[in-house]
Amino acid sequence: MKMTLDNILEEIKKANSIVLLTHEHPDGDAIGSSLAMLLALKEMGKQADLIIPEHPKTFSFLPNTNEILKEGRMESYDLAIALDCATIQRLNGFGKYFENAKVKIQIDHHSKNTMFGDWNFVNPVSPACAQIVVTMLEYFGIEITKEIGTCLLTGIITDTGGFRYSSVTADTFEFAACLLEKGINVSDIYRRVLEVKTKTSFELHKLAMNRIEFLEEGKIAFTYILQEDKKKIGTETGDSEGIVEIGREVEGVEVSIYMSETEEQDGFKFSLRSNDYVNVSDVCMMFGGGGHTKAAGCRILGDFEQVKDKMLHKVKEFLK
Image (cartoon, rainbow, N blue to C red):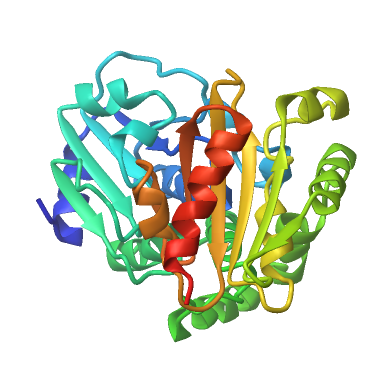
């Protein structure tokens, strides 16, 4: 069921216990939106549990990351709010907290959202979930403090590739301008989120770059990382973030594909990016995944060559 912002506010006011959840392998939008909501709830006099089992070290500079939990403190909450998550299956393996809650709300911007909440506030044209949260907090009359703004801007910068993607709106820049007036260092957040890499992340990116193949007259860029590579380098959560962008930035490439072996070594996870016309969300949906028009992902079980061929065959069908 779709809901209005008044419905959301009413449910928050009624709830005595609240849990916040987001998708597995969280990026800056997932973490930033969730932390902003946690801080906003405090401003409203509410306490909430934010559950994120693992998150990249890159985002440890965000305020209140020390309050992130790996497990819930109770089995059932009055209210569960899922942010930046298109399906209940992606809730970090903690869908039980969502399902057990008396009231379930989800806030999201993915076009292929399955509307899995009791109440669903979904805006598929928003460039980031964080931008939806901006609108919500302004409607609620909650001041966007420097701390909340830092979290929200991190989400927006992450999901817009630093304001580069076509999904960016005039409101996106207006919000960034307002944060500048509040004294938030936009350039510092940009650098931390998109430019700074750990040494292990650098080594992983270098390896992936050396492996890039260009296929279909340069329209497809493909690279991969195996579990043995990660063990050899000693990677941590989030080190592979941004690898898929390497191929996307090459002239003539329409689709960039990054293939990463699963921890179980029973298959591979894919991240896809496109530049102009290929809807990579539609590609990934063929394999049970999804995402955005120009940024999506999925998982395919099987051995290296088998899985690679399946993905390349499907992507080629979408090329002009």
